Image (cartoon, rainbow, N blue to C red):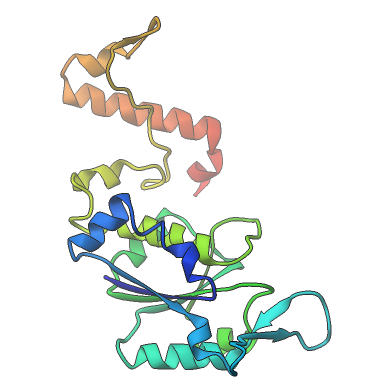
Length: 225
């Protein structure tokens, strides 16, 4: 999978993809993430990519020309399955969306900044708008990192044990069950006996019941879905 990210602050995306699972995914050649500084397509020598909004109001807006030129140039190299804009008023990102996007080959992510991007870019280029939650960040970079991480770990071969992702929270609209490791007795608190008896079927049933119970208690809205 190839993911391009257009941003005005590429430095914010250096660390998330340089460590742990995302780093290994790229080293294996299963995922390539490239960031592109929007200022490369600035309209003048002052590296301008934003301007005041028509009608007045606080906050700058990313101009259409730099973004359009950036997208046009990148599209010459590859055809994108989705051109995604990270925005608080987009569709709420969830595990099902991550599953679907992990099946694509090429994605382009646009990171908003300041007050957002010119609406004409959204109308003419964007095919998918994503929000990571009902709150506002300083820009789309951290949100983009979340989306790429959620997608990347689902690519076959990225995780050492590919079945691990199948039991993550939200995969079946259920939260993950509690997990335990050694020691079996920690300060008087013991691991549930069923997990130490070596019966896979009983363990599977126990985990399902625990997932169901935890979801009912913490996220009953998932069961409604």
